[in-house]
Length: 407
Image 1: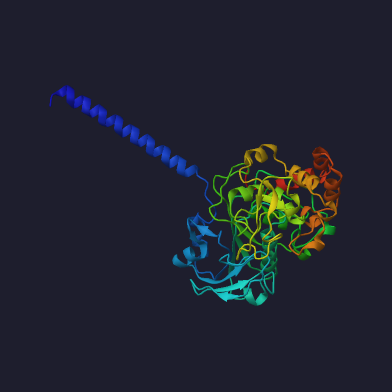
Image 2: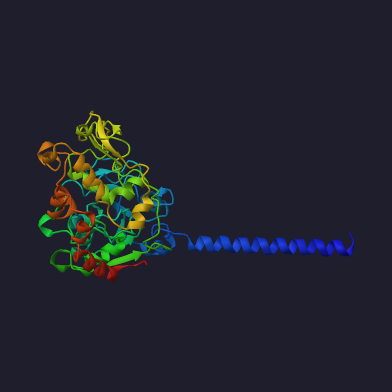
C-alpha cells in the first residue's frame, strides 16, 4: 500500500473514531437526561436499606423497570418484613370499593396487611418490627383518587410510632393541571379529605411535604420523610404510565380525561364501567335518539361487577379519540361535557338523583361543593363556573409552590 492510501485510511479511521465518540457522548447525555423514577434509582436508596427491617406500601404500579418493587428488593437482599396493600390490593386483583383481606403473598411468602378492610392505617403492632416504611404508589393527581388519603394514613402511623417514611417518587401524569374548586370541608369524605382543588398538580412526595407543612395530620404531627426524587422531571412533561394505576384507569386516555370525567360518577350516566374503556365513554338508555354512539355495559369481574345500566344499550359521548392536547393547552377541567349531557338528558330531575342506584356517587362530594350542581342545572356559562373557583384556587397555587420539588 502506498503512502497516500495509508494516509487516506488513517484519516477515514480517525473520522470514524470521532463520529463514534460523539455518538456515544450523545447517547450518554441522553441517558443522563432521561426521566427516571425514584424506585429505578436503586443506587440512591439500597445502601440506606441495609440492615433495616423494611415494610412497603405497594400495588402493581410499584415497579423497578418491569419487575415489581417487592420482588426486586427481595432479590437484592433487602429484609422486607411485611407489605401493606391499599384499595384493589397489593397485587391489584380486587375491584373498586371491595374490601381486601390480609394474606400471605403467594409469590414471595411475605405477609400482606390490607389497609382497605378492617383498618385504614397500620397499627402500633403492625409497625413494632419495622425500622423503615417505603411508600411507592403511582398517583394520577386528583383529589378523589384515594391514594393521597392512603399516604396521609401511612404518614400518621409513622409519625405516631416514630418511624421514617421513604418515598420513592413518581411523575404525576396530570402534573400540568392545577384546577377545580377547593374542597368545602362540609363535604369532606373518603373521596375528598383535604382543602385542595380537584387536580392538585403535585407528585406524591410533594403532596407529603404539603401534608406535613400545612399540619394536616392529627394533632399537627409531623412525619419524618426521606425522598428519592424523580430525575429529569417537570410538571408540564407528558408521562405515559407503564402500568395501569387501577383496574378502571386502564388506558392513558382515561388517565388524562379522569380529572374531568370522574365527575360523571355523580350522575345517572354510565361512565364506561362495565366496558374495557372506563372514563372515556358516557351514556344512558334515556339518550337514545339524541346520540348515535352507543355501547352496552356488562359485568366484568375485577373491574365492574354491577355497573350502572348493566346489559342496557347506552347512548352518549365517545371520547376515546379526543385530542388530549386540547386539555393540556387549556389547562382547565372540561365542564362542557357535563353541561351538554345534562341539557340532552330528558328526565333532568333524575340526572343527579342518587336514590336510583348505589352505583352513583354524590356529585357534591366529588366536586367538593354544592355550587357546581346548581351551575349545571342553570346552564351557567363556563367562564362563570371557572370564576367561581376563585380566589381559593389562586391561594392554593401560591401555597403549593412552597412544597414543589420540580419546576
